[in-house]
Length: 202
Image (cartoon, rainbow, N blue to C red):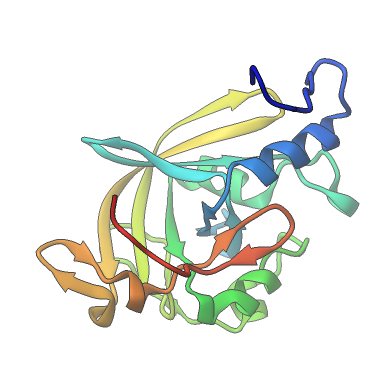
């Protein structure tokens, strides 16, 4: 950053968690993929991930990065990743402001045999093309089949091909456009969250 004052950090010498804070505080705002999956025993899982974006327009593919477990499940494989690899399908639900508390509840470390739909207080709704339910209350849901899982360091990049997308009627503006004012998406910052405020065109 020539000609200006700047702090410079080298990931090779910084603590992993410290550099993580720099990344998550810089790459903002991030949309939240609220991923529903199902275990081999049929237990429903629901968990949010903010390392999430579009990977390809054709075939329509979404990408989420899933890290290892934290706190009491430090270093373990997250149930979401296990379920996706076993079943080969999952749903990405978009989180609205109104669903913030439910999403936060589902972010905790639940045992693999706990139904996280029930824990979060949301309703499972049958999908059309896969055997994984979507969150009925979510404004948008993408039914996905697994394309591939790519190990990236400690994390796993999951690519899912969209088979269906369901958009709540009030959030659909027609002509394949989404009404952002009705969608009211919730975004992840560093340790906190945000909604959309002022919008403008450039």
